[in-house]
Each structure stands twice: as structure tokens, then as C-alpha cells.
Amino acid sequence: MLPRLIGRSSGTTTRSTLLLPAQDAHVSRRRHSSVSSSTTAAENSASATEGSVPPLPIPHIRRITTRSGVPLRMLILGAPGAGKGTQSSRIRKHFDITTISSGDILRRNIAEQTAAGKRAQAAVARGMLVNDDIIVELIRNELDTIEGTSWLLDGFPRSITQARALDAMLAATNQPLDAVVNLVVPESVILQRVVERYVHVPSGRVYNLSYNPPKIAGIDDVTGEPLEHRPDDNPESFRRRLEQYHGLTKPLLEYYRSAGVLASFPGETSDIIFPQIHSYLDDRFD
Image (cartoon, rainbow, N blue to C red):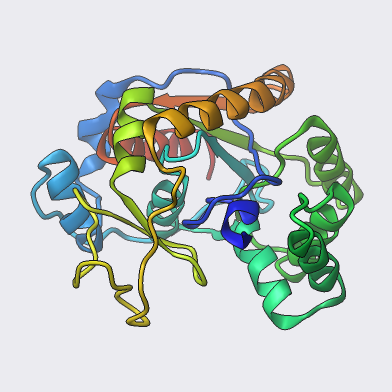
């Protein structure tokens, strides 16, 4: 099934693409108060339920680059259900940065029937994972279209092979990866989110019954089409998926830690984690 293959970057479930960099440090939660005042009004309905945070002013969106003034290259990592899509959205609302979802790219190329999209669709139809060559080609093509802008990549790489392929792409433009943001969310919290999660499969939009419910139960807010609850979105199945994720991701974390670009941010809600990320970006980059 397509959503299972293409990931969860903006809401669906991918089995073949993602990862990112930053300095290996658990950023202190005490920074929460210094940044939470800049949370957007658009985030308030979800935030108020998830973390009981009152409405806050709309932030100023500021340009972000490296200290040398070149565009920022950043990844975001985290287990399925950790909130990568939520954090990517919040980062975009505060910083002038393009967010890229490998799952969205794959869906779009299949829908548009591009050459790579047709090959990916053939793999999906056979019940196979999309191979690295196709994923790398899709990512390379996408990055070529946004050259000269800062970007945040969600869903790629998911393996050391893909990480090295991304490094090679960036080396060709002499702009290596600057940061990998790693979301560290307790497994019990992730499991609760997954049990209450509903997805609009064509778009990848994700809803949660507790803190981000659809306006009409079971219906996508944008299209009016029905939402789906994945049969394997249950504690037993999801624990197995988490084990698979950790097995694949541990080498990636070590890879980016050794490169000095991994930064880990712990917390149970997006309102705890995002202020840490905001402070990190503010402190480390211009």
C-alpha cells in the first residue's frame, strides 16, 4: 500500500527514506520559556490541548544561514510518531527555510508520472520497497530546484548508503550538511499518539484525536474525503516498527555524531521540544 512505503514525513508512513544533522547534545529544557513566547497563533489549538499552552503572538520569520552566510542544510530525525512533521512545520513558521518531505516527493512523482515516479510506482505495485537509486534520484532532482535556499529534509536518508549519497550530492556544491535534529520522544507517548492517529492517504495529512482532530470525525478537513486508521497502528505492531526503526537509525546517529552535526532534543510534547530546537538554531546559525 502506497502510504506504508512512502513515509511519515508529512503524515504518511515511509519505509525507505530520511535523516539529518546537528551537534550531539541534549539541549536543556530550561530554554523552553525563552522561546515558547514565539509560538504561532496557528499552532495554538493543537498546542493548547497537547501542552495547555495559552495563545501566543505570531512570530517574526527570520532568515537563517550558516555563520559564513551560505544557505543552511539540515535534516530531521525521529521515530515514527515522534512529531517530525509538526516540528518541521513549526521551524518553517519561525525561520525562512524550505521543508522537504521525501514522502511528499515520492507521492508527487508517482502522481505526475515522472520517469523516476513510474519506476517507484512499479515497485509499489509489486509490494516492494523503492530502491535507493530511485530515492536518491528523486532527492537530487528536488534539491536542484531549491539551490541557493536553506532547507530542512525530512525522510531521507534512512540508511548509511543513503547518507553517503546525500554527502556526495552536497560535496558537489561544496555545502556539507550543517545540522541533524534528532527528536527523542518516550515510546509510551509515541504509542498513544499512534493509537489515536488517522491519515488522509492521498495527501499524507495526519490527524490525532487528542490534540489535532479533524473538524468532522473521520473526514479530511481539506478534501472532505474519508480518513483511514492503519490496521497496524496498534501497540503490538507499532512496537515492532519502533524496533526496526531503532535498528536502522542507530548507525545513522553514530554517523552524524562522528561528523559533529547531531543534536538531540528530548521531550514528551512539541511544546517542550520546539523551544529547544528554536534556541539551538538561534544560537548556532545566523
